[in-house]
Length: 273
Ligand SMILES: C[S@@+](CC[C@H](N)C(=O)[O-])C[C@H]1O[C@@H](n2cnc3c(N)ncnc32)[C@H](O)[C@@H]1O
View 1 (cartoon, rainbow, N blue to C red):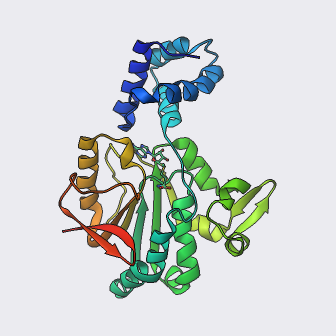
View 2 (view 1 turned 90 degrees about the vertical axis):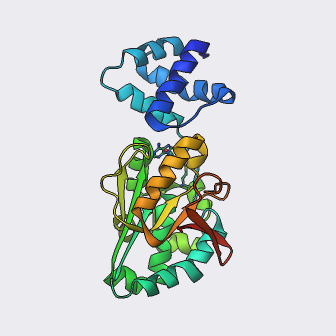
View 3 (view 1 turned 120 degrees about the horizontal axis):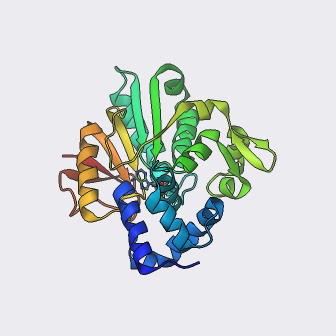
C-alpha cells in the first residue's frame, strides 16, 4: 500500500501537530507500513481511503490511533547498563542521603513506552534500598503518549524476548511469574509505578517536583525548538539538586545551556545550573 505525496504530507502534519514527532522524507516506508494495519482495521481498501477517513475524523479517535502507530517504542530492561550501575552505586545512595529528613523521593519517566524503564528503577529500589521502599514516600510516575504502550506497561506482562533483553535469570525469577507464554511482573513492582497518559508537548498538570527525570530516547524525534521548549519545562519540575537523564545519543548542549552536564561514576546526567 502506498501513499500519495499529498496524503503523506497530511499524515506528517497530523502527527507533528499532535505529538511533535517529525517524520522526514526518509520515513515514507515507515509511515506506509505502520498505516497498513490501521487501514485493514478501519475497512479502508487502500491508504488513500484511510487518509480520507482521517480527514473526516471528527472525534479525533482515528488521529490518536495514527499518532500512536507512528511512535517508536523501542526499550528494554536495564537499557544502558552503565547508567543503572551509576544509579545503584552512586546517584541513588547520595540522593537518599540528601532526602533523609523528608523521607520522600519522586521519579518521573516521561517517555516510559511499555514500562521496562520504570520497572527497572522499581527493581533497583526494591533490591538495593528495601527500607526506603518500605518506609519512605517513593513515587514513580511513568507517562507516555501511546495508549497502547501504557496499557501494556500497566498490565506488566512481557514476552520471553522482552525479558531476555536485559534481565539476568535471578532477577527474572525474583520479580516475575510465568503467565502462559508471558512473564508477569510482581504485584509489588507493578503497584510501585503510576502509569498515566501524558503528551510532552501539552501541559503537565499532575507532574510533581521530581528528584530524577528520565527523558530517554524521545527528544530525538523532535525538532530543535520543541526540544528547547520541553527542556525549559523540565527545569520547572526538576528539584534544584535533581537529575535529568537523557538517552546516550541525546544532550542538552547547544539546546539549553541552563543545564550543567555532570558525569558521575561513568553516567551522564544534567542538572539545573
Ligand atoms: C524509544 S521510546 C523510549 C523508551 C524509554 N524511555 C527508553 O529509553 O528505553 C520513545 C517513547 O516516546 C514516546 N513519545 C513520543 N512522542 C511523545 C510525546 N509527544 N509525548 C510523550 N511521549 C512521546 C513514544 O510513544 C515512545 O514510547
